[in-house]
Image (cartoon, rainbow, N blue to C red; front, side, top):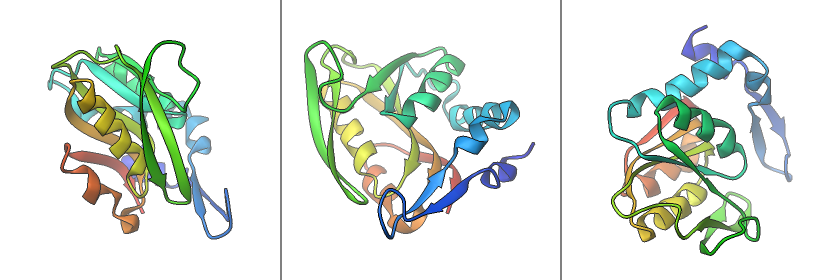
Length: 174
């Protein structure tokens, strides 16, 4: 299987979760072991040898790739969750989405000063989620090495607001 074949496993669902949004559904890719392994490898490989300590994965689909990437890089994993889901003291950040707004939280002791982190999510649209993750990581003392996503919706220019923090890698660009 080649990288370009992964795009053929992404289905577009019109008007989900609301009218006018074309949702990119990668669940067909997850069903195929070779495709899943290739996606994880392509997302992780730019960060090999860069001394990554932690992978921060955004809820919820960032957890799917984040834990696998953390394992591939021999790094720890930190879940970045929606409010009220973490049991210990948290730091919080609000952000805007392509079709609304939300907040995320992370444990205040999840990142130690100077730890090298990468941020992972399934999709980059406007960049709001990853920007909020980046701000939280920096607030906790982390050094952002980079960001990686499976899918990038390039026309929404989310990359533009993220590259001030670190380089952004994407496997599939629409």
